[in-house]
Image (cartoon, rainbow, N blue to C red; front, side, top):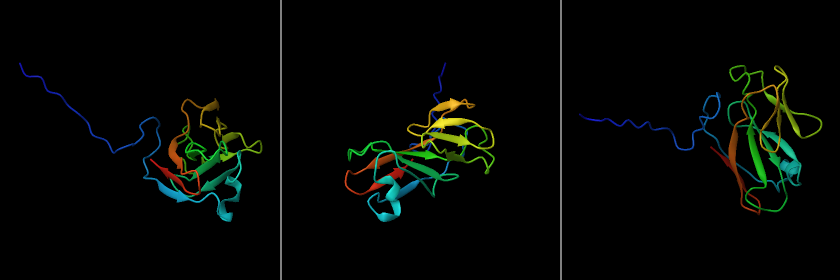
Length: 137
């Protein structure tokens, strides 16, 4: 009797945790540049182009560590096929909300607050501690 072993290859670092289409992300930004002024202090955030429907970059700490930032896909995991279901930062600068479904997530890790069954997609965000933030998947 022969046993067959099947292995399935997937693109390196491709996420399968959510139901959002895969889009290659390879973005470099410079938080000390005046264009990214909002990212110069802890708690600052900014929308940038990239991903499926855009990316939210949030500065968790200002310790100049590689993990200072988080990068979150703006596509709602509740309505991933609706291009109008973009996640938006709310006035408290803590809550992310899909304004169509009403689902809410936390800005510091994309974790669910209410109305969703999946976290938001996170991209790898690595800060060099000086001036370069690289966001990739």
